[in-house]
Length: 139
Image 1: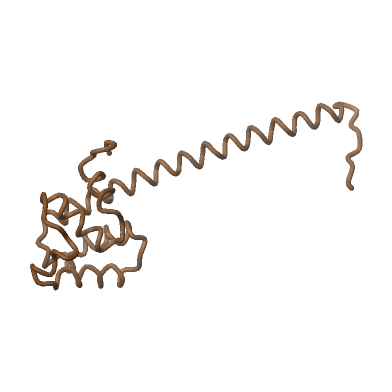
Image 2 (image 1 turned 30 degrees about the vertical axis):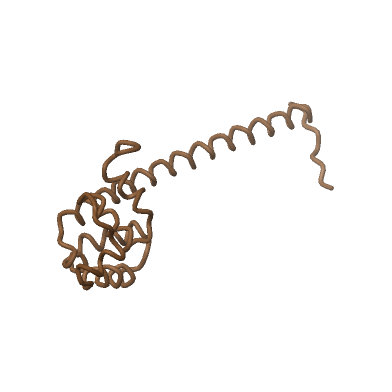
């Protein structure tokens, strides 16, 4: 076991206490930094979700797969590759109106748009709707 040589300026007890305080301070600082980054990421994703739902609400279901801006937002939300998002968006946009009801239920335009984004991104439609309407927390 390694032992440190006694210092003429500081006793081993004080050295251990200083090391303990430094460890506690660094742990608290690290936790604060992680929490701040988590909040930033959450806010960024909520803003992106709101934009995607708003755009899906404006666009017709048949052209969702062709909108580069919409696909880009969905790629960021899903953290998925472009071809996966494009395939899902094209699948949804090529369905007949009666078949779309199997994936996207009728409701308010905002709710329908949130469900369309959910099909493409595999995210919860409730979270997307809440983000788009600032129902739980303002963006």
